[in-house]
Picture 1: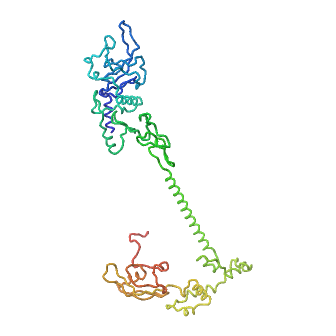
Picture 2: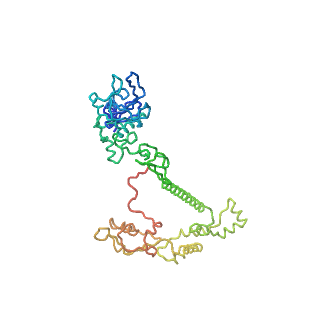
Picture 3: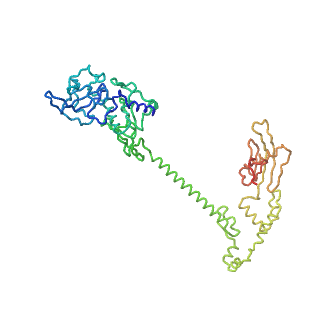
Length: 479
């Protein structure tokens, strides 16, 4: 589009066929007639018959070749004004004293007076002048004059390729870039402003501005703040409540959803921070509670939320001054040899292979037996540890014609050491994987402590070391 506009500017520099190009710096009342001749109201000095000069007359001069300068030559057709007078210092668009087109005149340079027009002495350009105001042509001229005074590109006077002096087109073919924009649903713009392809094409009101109907859509006003203006808007459109519309807005920006999202994000962030801080505080508080020195009866105080019950020895020491003084001495050692001896006895005793509670209890000291009985009541179990019983275990891989493991029955007692032995490929790893629930497509049943269930429920109590390494082989060990 810039290349096309460059051609326009070159054509505007010296194109005699462009009637819309303003050649003068200042204009009085002027217009373009139906043949695109420039007509201007002139102050006329005529000589009377007695040789005196009349300086009060005005007349309209219409020339076809504007390159001569309407205020510099006396050629062309002349017309008397309708109301006479001598005022010519009026706006360019003033039409209060138009031409009398009933009689065409011409200027007699020898006698310095207006005489009847001799069409044979006029140029073809001047001969075509009519003196009748063509408002569409004049509007283009007025727009070009205003653009020239503002220092803008004379878009209103852009010539068309098929434009001639006395045969003006009613349609100008659009520029290539403008045609592409219009086919895409956009308007043609130059320097951010909408333009028309020639003086006869209407221009859509600029977006961000509005063109009031009372001015015929020719006056462009900026869209005020709090409103928005789309292309071709005759009046501003008020923005909705909670939206943002600065001056010259083309659309409204809704802020309510954005504010709600920000508020929700802030609330979620505050809740997350509070949750993390509270979790850390509770964890540190529980850790301090677990590490606080207590009597031996307070060992299980934090396991299930039970209240702490003090030992009688601890309670007595709190009220016995001698015991307190002895406890504060540097060489004091607590007298709990019997209790610790019971725990040591429990660690030194061999664990029986068969589940026989009475035989197991016969080798316990009275203190240790009391401890074991209390633990049995707390855990609701006769003995500690896990025993496994499996019946008719089987395994058939997906897509295999027959099972590779079947009819396997046995048990593993608590406290025992059991080894699965066999040659390579005999199914040792397969059997252990089926027993531990590490594979699918299996059959049979497994009971833990004579309770049917799945091994995965006890995964926190059972350690499982697979046959193959589970560490990535690509990992290295730093030297």
